[in-house]
Amino acid sequence: MNIEHPAPLIAPEQRVLPEWIDYNGHMNVAYYVLAFDIAVDVYLEAIDFGEAYKNAGTGTSFALQSNVRYLGELKEGDPIKITCQLLDFNHKCTHYFMQMYHATEGYLAATAEQVNVHIGLPERRSTPLPDHIIANLESMLESHSKLGTPEGAGAAIGIRR
Image (cartoon, rainbow, N blue to C red):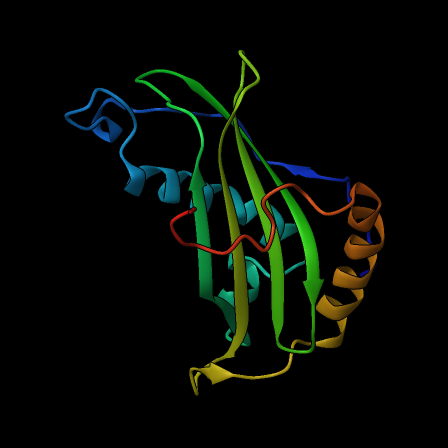
């Protein structure tokens, strides 16, 4: 199934929940990761690599590496818009970049870059992606590559001197 993919993908809006607020009065770092994880389902579904694929018993997606940048505060009740852009893939892995915005004020609050691997079930080890998902990734990458490389993609971590 080769389908057209909007560039970037946009996840359904979320809101900062009261339980996501820490003692500093803003969204705790763990919940930024949770919000990104909720949004990534839109990306996985768009390439037929989501929950239905996993439930069919063929395979699933595991995170291998993630880099989150915290750029702006979000507070209780704030609306969140998350976009997702595919950056690259190979026969087993995908590499994508997400951006979290305050949905009404428009500022960039955080980014998350992630590499995921295809895990075969039931052996629970990396295996090649099936051809139909590769075809969907090719289509998505063709669309998403027109966006260029997002600022912050591939960022190293360390203390600036």
